[in-house]
Image (cartoon, rainbow over all chains, first blue to last red):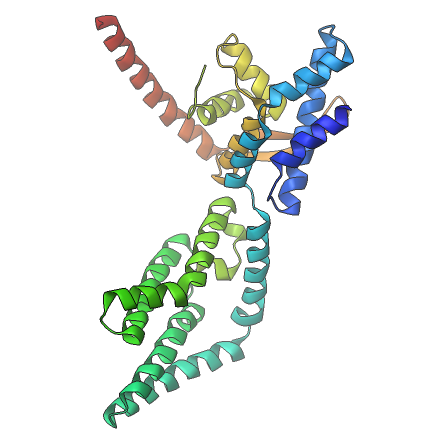
Length: 213
Length: 103
């Protein structure tokens, strides 16, 4: 019965947390509960009362869960971190991929310039979007962005370019522009938000390279 | 009594005396406030993890009565933050007391 009660509490307190975070919470709460139980038993109450007191002292599991989700990695964030680590090792660590992406950027922008000279506006726009869009992400691979401050500057620059690209893609009409930006960059905004949350929870030394961008 | 926002400072204060584990930190805060600051202990750990993420405390594995426990100790940066928080709190507390005495 004791474990059933504590298990129920832990189930609620660890909801949506990553496997590692949940294991950490289970361990520390279990230790805390045992100490609390021992103290209550030493005061002379019976086991049932001691268990109730130990569980009561922990408070509302949902409140604890809200607190934990702010400071420990959630399951979604852990998945994103895994992808970020994979990206870092698959793209950032391979010079060939970096130079290939750099070439796509240069060719895209060159193509856009040529298309513009020949009056092919739609092609020019498309190639500019491909070149600059690819370029802003490739730039992060060429520069040594290894401090949070540099990373913030880079991200600011990235979003300026992203907004410029949507402006080129969807024209000057604000409603169309915003709609296009939401559709095209919704996933990117969500990723950015999740990365922001992960950055708050992990020490800089543990950030994979992709987390700086 | 609701003491939202001051829990991190109280944790740092307790840890500035000696490294300790979560349960002892909670009991110390309750004991030293003579039961006035009574809080739900499940909220202590998120606060401890936040302090750890900010580099103000660090954790390590220790033993108590032969049982492994996660202990926390204050860092140098944590001591600096505590000094600053303590000074701010004393200033605030003096100001509020002054106003209440006037009423």
